[in-house]
Image 1: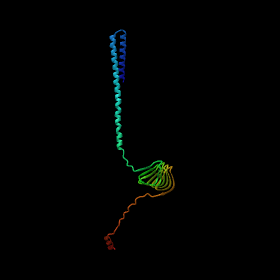
Image 2: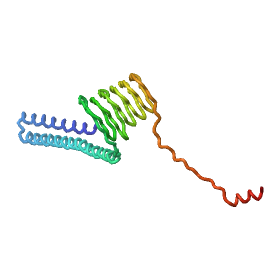
Image 3: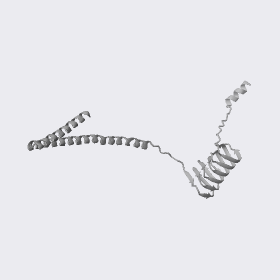
Length: 221
């Protein structure tokens, strides 16, 4: 940078010096010498501006090339993350929307989320019943898992029954295990039921005495 400044200052000083010499020659009526010095000062000025133009192009040309390399490097991690994303196999899920009222019995497989109001019985195989914060149910619930975060009036039959912070159960609870979190409410009767397990097959091995053993016992007697 110091070399650039020194050369620029030298060129500008020479230009101003030539212009002053040309002005003096013009005043003393030396027209030919005045024209020569004026031409030399003009060429020096043109050389100064071309030099500055080339320097500006070199500076901005380096800056424009840098973002291209960075943009290409950012593409590869996104593609690798998309390829590694696992594909989850989700079981069927039924949702009863908020502000909706369903009257009747429901018999299904999979999970069910109740955001609205259900008047009737719900039976679920191989899934869970989830009564959300705004959900209300009047009837009997039967499922392997029941999560209550809303309002239930009726009977709940499940292997595991969880009453969450905003949950309220008024009725009968028939479950293998029941938990009530802080803020939950249970009013009614609780009956603990053993979890249903498949009975183990008993093996019966018959032991028969051989005829040779019987004869040995008689001879010994």
